[in-house]
Length: 193
Image (cartoon, rainbow, N blue to C red; front, side, top):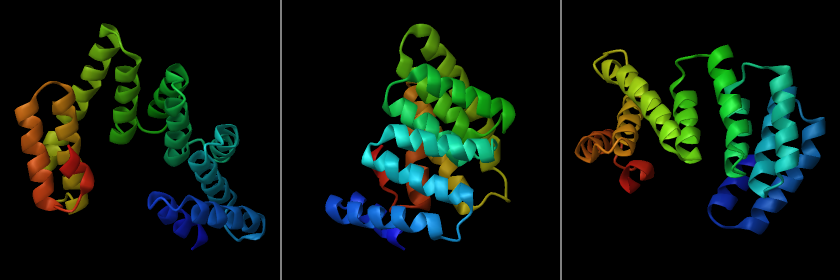
């Protein structure tokens, strides 16, 4: 409860309340019944929020050493490198995860495309566009599936909106965002885009 309350406090701008809750969590973690992976993930997230990137990296590397297939640790570790503009490190982590975990994982593919796009230059932009096109080809057929959950359908539509926006297909992007909003009109991300 303290970790969740700390996250909520942070998102509401109550940084002192967030710090107090996170400090309490750090004291309780060693004696908690959480798995080692969960302990490291929670500490890593706290350190990342606090801007203590060295400790956050160490925690996420600990998770990776315990479970090299842990997508959350991969995303968090590479995300820190993105925040620090260490694009090559982030890219290497995503490429390795796609190779070792799941070559079709949409979140990992989107993250790799974002890193390539952020690096600038026509070659990186073309590479990112190729990934976006691949994701687009994966997401479109899934929309026709009756087995797709409402949340997965929303995510596919939102992803297609982002892809089309970044590809310069603005009318298509707006259409996908509007369809996503029909599913979840309260989603702030779709409203913003």
